[in-house]
Length: 143
Image 1 (cartoon, rainbow, N blue to C red):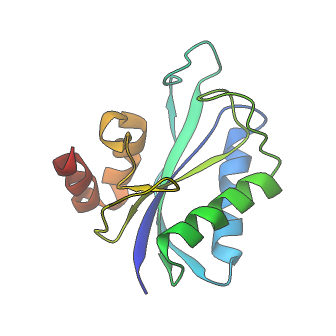
Image 2: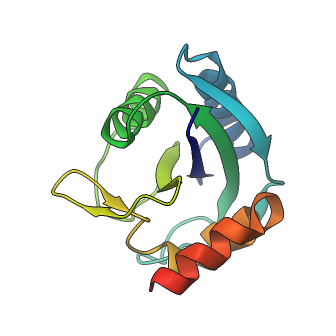
């Protein structure tokens, strides 16, 4: 099965509980198996900085979903957990970003891989380096 890497974050509600629940839901999906997860780090907000700090982590998964279908599965989990998109880079109950899928490079209206901003965000790279340093290095090399 193909391997993909996700970045998860939350900064409202109980972020640690929400991150654990998102991992549980990902692993419960019939086409996704969580194979590694980083520790949770606390970071300042990025983009829109007048909001609570974030709890961030990364996960490695195996999936037989193609990249766009995996993106939709992540968005479905966010929605099912109660995420409502009020503003770009605003506070969030849960955020699940598809960072990389194998070594696929794509740029479509629905999905850009590797993630367009991953190489600029330590809150993505630090947890990712913990579980897959070669993937973090590959993402940085693409920028």
